[in-house]
Image (tube, one colour):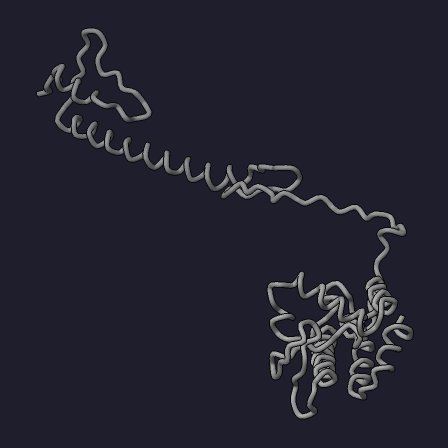
Length: 260
């Protein structure tokens, strides 16, 4: 004997429909007669439909990601970009435009090897400074066995390290000519050479220079401040040889006349 399905049974079967096909189990007042086996079949069908929908959705998503997106060409300019990331191009620097060669921007000629000897020149300059200072201290010393004599500025006797070589025209403004000129250097005490009363010392030094050489010679020495010479390695080596010889006239002649 068949059992007529109640309205509650049909409502249970129609809850949360997930099948692709819709079931209209009731229309108006019609009743659907279902057996126990029929209800079980409907439940199995609903489960199978749910699984089918999930499998179909996963399959469609896989097809979309693997086939359709790979075939899609995303272009920027003329190069194809990867789907994994859209990296911006680094800004390119504009190319430098070469200027036409003129007299102002001509490339400089490379210097000769003899001019590129800063270490050698530095050593020669230091050696010449020691030789010239020792020569002046020996020349103005009273005794031959030690550095010591009367200060050219104040007249006080000093010896040892305090008996120094002082310049009439400072070496910073006199240039290479007066820096090593024997008439511009004299034995001087340390207090007068490096003291604080430089204005007073300058007056006394000038009076002593005029008394020893005369006004004309002092003016000639001061005029050598504007003399331009090339103080290269050859200049220092020549001056070192002259001071080692110890002939003051040759040193003065070379500085004032020959070295131009």
